[in-house]
Length: 434
Image (cartoon, rainbow, N blue to C red):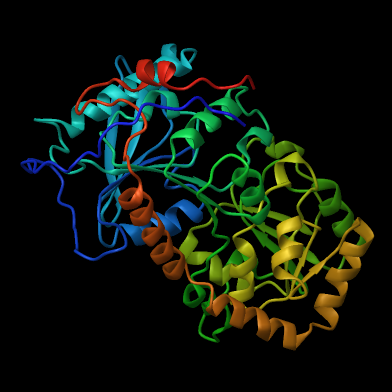
């Protein structure tokens, strides 16, 4: 894919800014990132604790992180504003709030979010001096036209954890905006090997970082003192899943499991998204428990005799590499999955794979009645070696290299403390049609 060459500008140097911030942040020299990080995310910080929170909470041990979410629209709001909170040490969450009447102007809303953020970061703002010349980190390309270049960033990171264009109700412009983001990124990370292959065709500095795991956290499921929650104390055997309940699951398979194995209880822990909860299969032995805290997940997985990954094989799952695989392993449980390509490539034979509904049912039955203790022990060891800390350290090294060794830090014209991102980008790069 060809992108028009972008204007090369000299490297920005960090200005010494007075610190008049209303918030106190911790910084440490020689940490995982030398600079503050501004994040653009389509996922909310208080949703399921997953890759963004695992990575950024660790980067935040040495540098401030500004986590900008997608806007929410409120009936009783007159004018837009930014809600700032500290949900985690050194992480500042930004939730843009807009009147409901603004909901139809998707791009205009992003421009306003940018302008409000720039004002908060500038002289007299609540974050005055805290995020000068940051690393700009993206989980989605949707805000790229408005946000790239707006914060005088010295480097752009794209951490691609999903192929968002293949998700249900994806905006039609998501692919085009992702290509704009990739054209301006200094380094691209991917959460799956299939994603790595796809994005490597678009950028020359792409790195695969698959799942990490907090092995000690999920290892609590193996300890005798860990107490199973009351709502998971069901007749055994228990086959369980935790994670988002969305279009990626195979609900036909779940219904067949419940019918074929009526003596089993099937437990699903997690929030619903992009599906109607009323359409979930209902059986006496299927239990939809809803979202539970990350801290409580080891207590739930302790109740499971076998852990499930009953994903549908469709566009939405073509590129996924489920984080829960290693979390299940750390808990010391047998695991059964459908034939997700990254799971087959990275985690068999520890994970049993059922390529058909009948194969999956048989694999669940075998995992309960004759679990392979050697494979379970292998999974515990794999999880022990797969820490998020190691991933974060290596990512930090690659970010420093990308910023320091590039002849330019910025590929787009940007002006400190001004909202120049959108118009400049429109002229800076010509993209092929979607």
